[in-house]
Length: 310
Ligand SMILES: [Zn+2]
Image (spheres, rainbow, N blue to C red):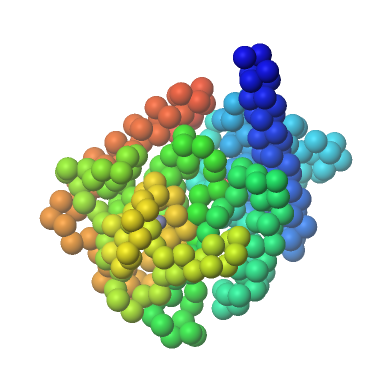
């Protein structure tokens, strides 16, 4: 019995070390990649990682994560806000979304292969020893049509581990980051896998849209899961149903709809229940669920989403 418990405690320690190791690695890579400092994306990722460390059990403080004193002081000097607000404000996106933005910005949206390869390099480092903390497993690319020259919009799956951090970040992205159609589709099901009786905000992307996901471990094409089929009208024979909003498709489609107004218009929700009033009601229910989840994590939320600024 005692032996079994010790093994469990050891396993726990290893898991926690993965968090610290991966967090530090991601921060170091982002600092290296950024062409200038301060950078909005570095600011955002610091806050997002510190927040996730803060709601972990046991907690990880920024000082635990950035254990190198020199680097800690440098970061604090250049990025004071994340150090102040990680324990009161919520991030809008999970960390790897910021890494993805940085890579797309550096490589240019048209260079799909290079973008995926660059992100894969980092994910491989993070996934050594089977670590799952702060890792996105898939990337998705969307385009308004099959023309190879049309703009590409990217997204990654949620880089959280565990049920509650995932649910927290999906709710936060719904309420603050995603295009309102994507948020509405996800809120239709959130937090469980059953549809709300009073609101159906699901959408159907036009046939000509490309929305294609790849595994970041081996670049295999990943067919949309059942949830993404239900959310965005993507055709799939897949039966696996990931938590709604978890997959890379959500962020990628959200980026597509933010910029391609015509696609957005064609995709609008068709259900009679998709009214402004019902959408508001759904938002309120998601906010309530989010508030409860945060309370369970003993997080005192000041009701603000963190806005990165430098
Ligand atoms: Zn999916």
